[in-house]
Amino acid sequence: MSKKKNSFLTFLTGAAMGAAALFLSKKENRDKVKETAEGAVEKAKDLSKDLAKDSGKVLKDVKKEAKKTVDQAKKKLKEVTEK
Image (tube, rainbow, N blue to C red; front, side):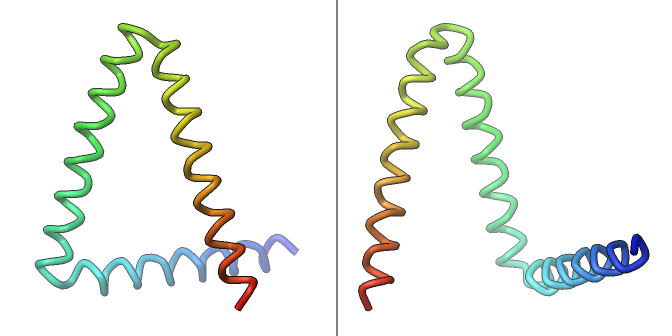
């Protein structure tokens, strides 16, 4: 049984790596990934600083954003299911 699980996991890993290699083979895609990663690092640093200053406010903001995202997802799901 474990061989089947490992084989499937190996397949999924290989497929993901192949897709990533294909995507990253283009220079513009590598540049986009680099830019996105740098932006994420900056956001993480800012969040860390904000957490150190006022964690309560940050948590309140995160909950607000999460609720907004959930509401958008519900709206999108409703649109898709009504088609």
